[in-house]
Image (cartoon, rainbow, N blue to C red):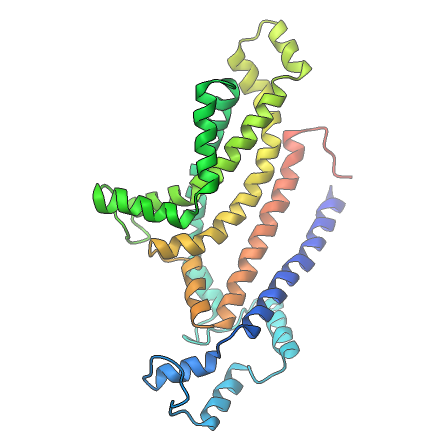
Length: 318
């Protein structure tokens, strides 16, 4: 077991490095000069232009201060060395430490992701179990139709529709609000969790239908156990294995999905901070957020792999 954990932990390093390298290169090769953007704003202009009153010396000095005049290999090496020392650098714009910015916004994003995962699991498992028990009936059809809708609807479109109906028309919930206000969390959590619940519902249904046809379930029925006990005590646990696999992936997807949802609902968080940093080409903030999200994603999948042994004792890590 310890050898397996060590091997998996070692394999996560190149994955995270690959993600950070890809994002680093994308940021530097995309159009737009962050130094020119900042100097243009400081000069009181709305956009960079050939008529901007910025001297070459000022431009070069700022590039030197930000370390952007160094070769890309040196810049990436400095970023990795900072990560090893627990330093994600400073924001080009605010000069605040990126690690502090992430920690300050993390509770908002983490709360939204966890509540969304709760919505996703509750709705997904309920729809999947009901559809499996009532398979090939109209109830099964309704449940799977809802699942298909959840998979096919873009989250930003669903969020806008929920805002129009429940916030603007019915006025039941706030359209935007403080992150500490639980009512402002309802619509973003439903928006983010609904798509994931559809995937879980479909997996839960197919897994439970397959398990209910296994020999040990037929044996349990032959012994006279009621269907409710058979499902809860014998079938559900084995049917959860593929669902658990997806839940680990879904949590990472929910964290990255907050980029859109926090922007739609004007909520504070890492996602909204990343969008703002991308628009402003604040490289150090984007790299820090990507590194944090990728690491969280990898750790979540690692924990999912370890949970297999609890769900199915036949699995051994050798």
